[in-house]
Image 1 (cartoon, rainbow, N blue to C red):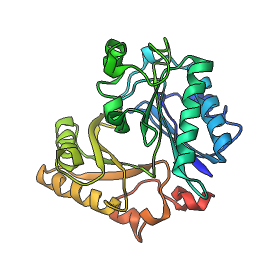
Image 2: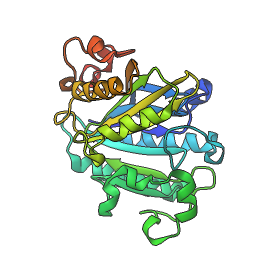
Image 3: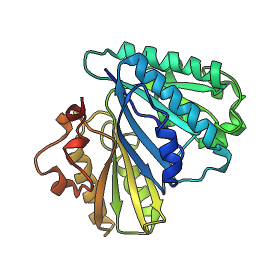
Image 4: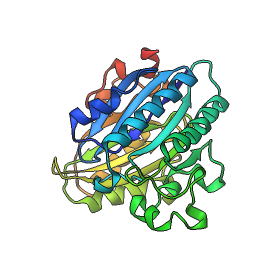
Length: 289
């Protein structure tokens, strides 16, 4: 079995999100997380590699039919309607199978839908593109200007899809998407905390972070990706944000996990320790297999 976690650029319209997710027929949908401020939805799929690859294709095709990236607005970085499609090996699957699924899907997205593709993570064909932030640098606006430059040309295809933009398709190990919401409407505080904790600025190993404004809630958010939870745990990340929040005299209201997490990332009293909202045993991927 493998997992796939497509992220598409719509998080406000529940009916529209439902129409897109309902296109999945060949894999099991374990979770759908939507965020109106990010204007983004994250879908968790599992199944046999070929079936999951088909589900990711069907999801992308439907998203292209219903969404227009030229009209999209949201605080989360994006380069396309179906922004990122990572494959993750699970039971009995190897990373090589996840890489092969991503390469096959990328070719199909261009051949059948004319959607240009960048390969990232362990599926990257260009070394620098292993890092997703490098692929998405500057977002859709920058990519639109630079896509014909040698360093920004897609791995498969050419130009941008008129309404779909481009997609990043990859293979990776588990990544935990973890958001910590602050009782503050000053985005500079969340941005500063994010900079302090991210690995690229000398912070925690395997941590990427952004500071975002959640206008609908009057809050700000430290939006975090933990790329190796065995190296840096959820508890460590939360405690580090807590230290900086105290420094800036802001309160942590609550945190949330986007999608599912592996069992070995969970610990006793996780909800209380992390001020975790909406967590249950169903959020643990092994409980769904």
